[in-house]
Length: 318
Image 1 (tube, rainbow, N blue to C red):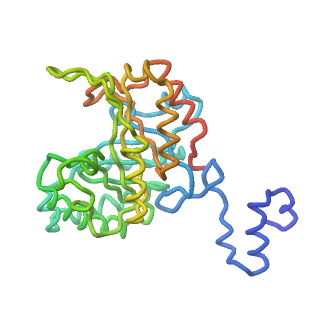
Image 2 (tube, rainbow, N blue to C red):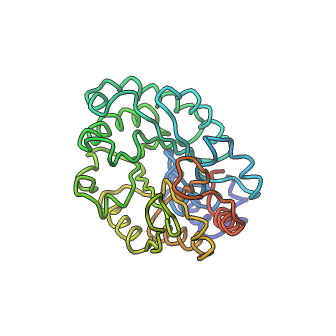
């Protein structure tokens, strides 16, 4: 940028540039905004402030119709893949990057957790990451999300410790993510606690799948009539943990039922704002009817309008 153009910039932007020109700081520290809210993100997609809004749409479907209905792109696109679907996943990640979205992808591992921890899946992990390197933007990857109840958590933990560094080394744009259910870590059996299951390796993003199930009725069980206290029971302890381990966190899946939306139309904005207040960097809504206990989809006007409102002000990549 030429000096004569500095007069058009605001003071927060101007000051670092003046210091850089004077030699007080390196020019590279005078970072330009690469998020729509004026903040920046790392090569692996971690925002310096604010939180992406987005979610799952259909069955790994093209999100363009959803975005068109809102008049704005989403910031994060959550998808799910088998171990043999890497080519399709890369295609989706590339399309997301071109539109300024951060793809947040879950993969099933090609082998058992024990075999993965022993190195049998190293080549698969390296190949996946190497191919994601060419996506054109940050990509968040998780392997075996929501593992609770699926097997020995210590074997899962060992798998994460094995493949996370392989993937991160192969692709500087890949943010390695671990996604858990949240409730089990904070209030469930100790074998699922964060202290017991978090691997001793660098993880870029911690995701938690937490839904508001007010009004949900499972077959043979009473309708749920209590509300979650997201702010105090989930966000506050997750922020405390996040700071203690130095790993940013977000909602990898969330949603609220139609009965909840009819009862409390402000749930969406309140939950998103509370999440941001407590350091969450992504709000990924489960806008699909796949594998659902309730109708999470943004079908009701109140739900669709509420999501559109938070998406309108949330940051996206430029």
